[in-house]
Length: 79
Image (cartoon, rainbow, N blue to C red; front, side, top):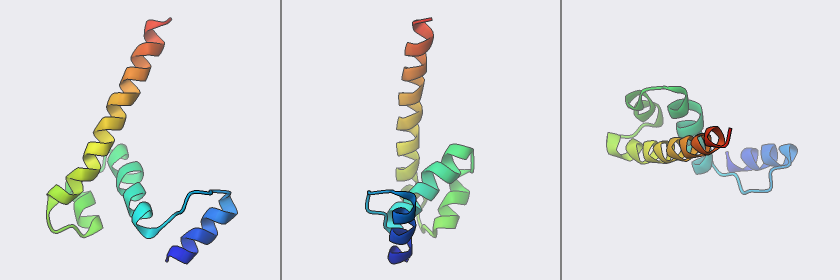
């Protein structure tokens, strides 16, 4: 799997090492949680036995939302 991901990264010009764990993490955060998929569903998709494991991904999403809102406030405040 990692060799396929490396090949795809090379074709796309991505220099960062892409591995299966990173792909799972990206799927969980970027594809599902940021698009409103319930955390319970994401947990099942990832095969986590304990939802607390999945909640680690959700904290990253919450941080990104906070960062994005701060940037938006700055942009709107400068209008």
